[in-house]
Image (cartoon, protein in one colour):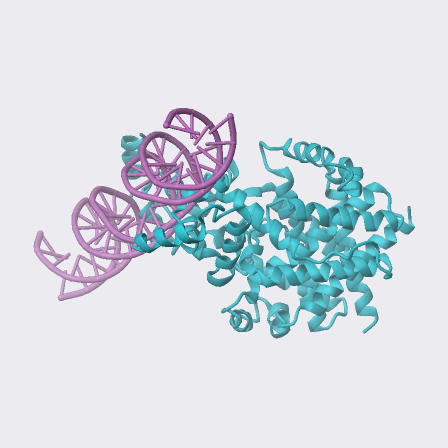
Length: 229
Length: 229
DNA sequence: GACTCCTCCCTAGCACTGTTAGGGGCAACC
DNA sequence: GGTTGCCCCTAACAGTGCTAGGGAGGAGTC
């Protein structure tokens, strides 16, 4: 389609420098995921978006799975980390981190689908882990509890965000939430009395408050544990 | 290949009754997932395990995705629900439910990978939802909080179990956990000082205690909220 | 300048996927 | 006996991740 002007672009822009590298590929992949959704993603499509053929991708990236690892780490990298310890107490800092991470994940719903089952231990993921664990250790937690606090935070934020996205947070299907609500309300109330009764309020559109509340519960539990040590 | 003896089997076993139905397909699919893992699963393989050809599956099941919905619901259905309210206080009942659900999910790690991003609202999922919400309502929570309590429980248990499986809980890769631990310990400790310090204890093999502790924190937070209403 | 090496993209193709179109045997019902 | 509907089949389509192997062209060396 854009074959011929591609030749021009190539000879002009990138006579010496390679026109592609991993970061450029990851950037395009994230853009494709955001725009077209998870199901529309494939190596061939990504290659087309980069104006190359799909096998060329494999020179830069070992496999689709490795690319997904890079994608996840890139998204995690968008979560801001305060440099040094701020003035806030440790628990507020952890909660702020959780809120930021959730916000970042919800901004890339298709990429967030890659997270479950993946270990978030790319460079950015490691930096985040080190940050959280450091925060907890300086707050007086021992090594075991600090590590567990980090795991708990990640489990909670990831699990919440993924399910939240499943419930229709994605772009374009914002009314899926209403659709599910209607489905639940239409169920036979003799079989599921309590569920039907609360169905209207089960899937509130604004989950931020609920998220923060749950996160606070988890962190409070953690704080309690430290005290009892 | 086995075409001719298939004819015999057919005329003998299944003269009148249909030899296949959805529950039989789901049973075989779960067996295949458990035995061979998620990556080895395909409609053709499932068909082969049932001694039929893959297009025949589509007479019983609309799509692979619908089959996955059925699978998830079947696994959820293995979580025991006490009939009627037991003698235990509500929070202990909820925690017991969370522990049971996690156990069931860990027993089918490959099927659990299907859960994230899927709404657990098949028959069994609905029954579970109704049960939990009923428990909370009778404990004095209003409709909004009861619904949220259910969501929080599901988010937490699902998120925890999925990540736990990612960390190597699957069958056959039990030493992946040790491998990840070694990787973390080998990181440059000047760049990730706190992470490396706790790396050895980050991924404990027995996560049940940690799970229960986190779950208790969430439930305690919920109880607190009720009091403040 | 000719040489080789390395980078980075290409074409061709493999083995596989989910899924549909359409056909046919066979039991059950009128 | 004819018709209906169930339940499986073969054939095939469009697409997937990925590999083998090739070739253009810049970089470095003699």
